[in-house]
Image (cartoon, rainbow, N blue to C red; front, side, top):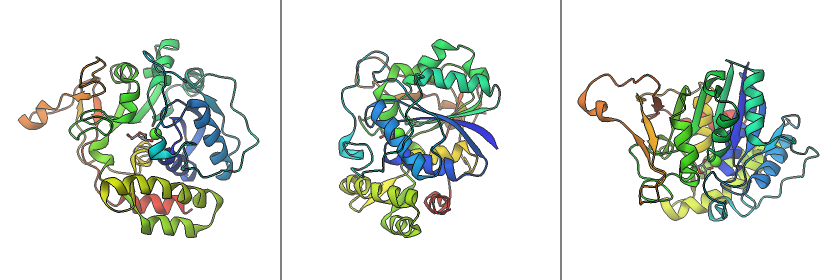
Length: 314
Ligand code: BDR
Ligand code: CA
């Protein structure tokens, strides 16, 4: 197994990503940190602990990370998408475990040092904890073997503004620092996540699995489906965070994924939060691998929703 560390804002699709990691045989989940995003960092940690207990992993250490962002305060999450409690108003049984006393950044750094050169890092919320971890440990990009993020949009439109995706938009300065720090980084943005969708038939089958974790996730999805129904005209859910988790575990193929420089607009203009990927070579037919660039996923083929359903059913 390989050591994995998750940074998240649990969150309904974050819950699916946690379900994926716990069910993946090659994964040793060594820790989780939370950040404000879908809800505040403390609430996200509570959801994470409660869900991990339901999934049979009450032992995984969870740390409460940054409440506020690098250059501005947290001012409320996304209750219309994830519910006020972050998990679609589902009341998870309260687990006995409490968060560690570490900050999110400290937990990331400790895990990276303990598994130097081996740690797989997955970030599916705003990137504040990782930016703070870089301040604590500038060698973090060398200590982490592979870093996969859900965030941004290279060619697709944004989801919280015309150009910005939520995880990047919440803390554009942190995202900019993370994208330019020299990690072995893969970006799973809206270019690919918007194309992988759970339908009501998947949800019903997950409910029928009957295990406490599968049932809880299926119940949360009812709320998420109602949000997406306003956009898609039918109840369904976009699989942002679990798709990033599946890339991190090496279970899905990146068909088109040039490695190019990515910077983030963190000015106060209309492009704030845009991930600017230099994709010029893609059009001009030159090789598009830049040393130190970010692997930007542009196409992930296959039936990921079916793969996810199977994994969450185990
Ligand atoms: C991202 O924002 C959050 O709402 C989701 O959990 C996902 O990580 C999608 O833009
Ligand atoms: Ca998330």
